Length: 149
Length: 149
DNA sequence: TACTAATCATTGGTGTACATACTAACTGGC
DNA sequence: GCCAGTTAGTATGTACACCAATGATTAGTA
Image (cartoon, rainbow over all chains, first blue to last red; front, side, top):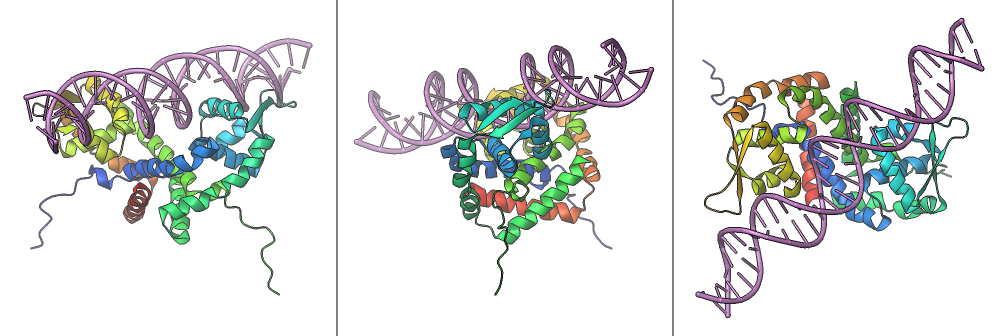
């Protein structure tokens, strides 16, 4: 007779929850960025906005909201802070006055040169191979796709 | 003569950043939990605290802070809210008056029966195999270990 | 034993993150 | 040109999340 395990596995075990690992991983990785971004006067979400703007510069709040998957209500104050630092300019779109165009300032554009070092610094600290990180990235994008449906 | 790619890869490309995928994945997965946790009157961080308490009940703030890798300053108001709902009791440790002991109430203990369904609901919504999730969990714990050093 | 250092939780400040409600501006159909 | 319905961004309220400072308590030590 085959015995079943006497102690059934606990579905609610904390260490087993992927959501827990995701939340902690997100927070701890962002914590790695914090001292690196601090000299640039950027928080991590602000850094992500800058990445988006370095790829294409006049972008609307709506556009950033879609790409970063962030609520416009979250971006609104964040973008004002970026403007206050002087990395970004906010102006209404002439063609559509509803839309707010975010444009990089000279200072914001120039910042990219400094930022170029960041990915290398982070990868070095994480001490993981390029392959591992690429694969993780793929799995995460799959999770995002599944969770967003 | 071997040609090098004319357009060099961009290290700052948003979609390539693991930190971005991590942040979005964490937020979107938590968003999956939101409607599921809402009937229990719990936010996701509160749910994680409950998971920890269901595993072992009198736990201090310090202890929870270590396990959940959360600042005590974050937990303090969160735990007061859990107390206000009636899932938890807060009382100073008799032996060490500095420590605050968090104990499950009867209501809090009973809630576990409802919560047992949650992992299955989430896995069903994510539509991913047990193996995929287990493997993701392992990689995330590796990232956490590397990032925490 | 008195003094000092370490520990634990809370408080206050800044910055996300999301939901809801709101205003201004645009659109299509008439 | 007008209007119903939509869209873009902002304002507000609640809840994390982290940091630094504070206060209370305990532990360590001369």
